[in-house]
Image (cartoon, rainbow, N blue to C red; front, side, top):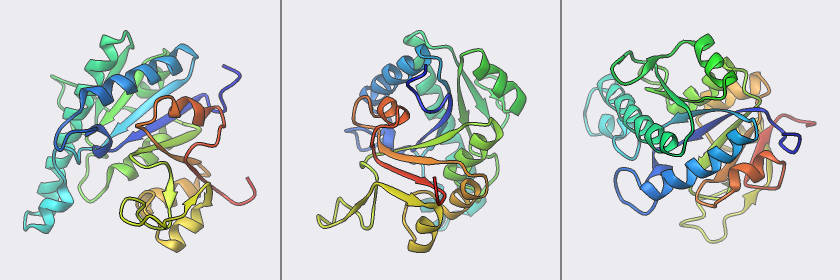
Length: 241
């Protein structure tokens, strides 16, 4: 336990991170890799919460841009996150990891309603808590949900899982000259317009001094290495840290 820098963490998984090698839906290999890494953390006593996106199934912003009512599209996106949460729960439990899905939109046949104190109690008992359905409100992203839930459960770190190995000054997929940052401040992210998380999420983290680690989830063991303080991805935090 002493080797890890953070005892309670929130892991933000985008829907795209669950795609793996597929073009739509969920790659079972990604879920298996996540379950193994999360299992090792749980065995070490790390308390884990997860926020999942839904972009691998439905993107509310894209549907809104195509003419759908924005609020309606966002609610559909929230339902997509519930599907991802249930798939992740199934994989984790098949690995012997006790898990609870908590939804901001009540659907008691498949998930518990989100109650902050109950979520904290689950984590204290060693259960992985998966937060689904965003904040339950349209116009808020799952990035903002991740920052909000991390603060609500007193997580000491927010881990943003992506398909690239950190934050760059340009898209490294399309620009081979893109430069990677090892460390940034919250204001760096906001002033440069870097695509780490949306501005609301960054501002929440900045106002409450919550560090963000952005890393490549496809690399086995990256979650553990980042939590041990190894140089993995990009860390975003305040000045003088």
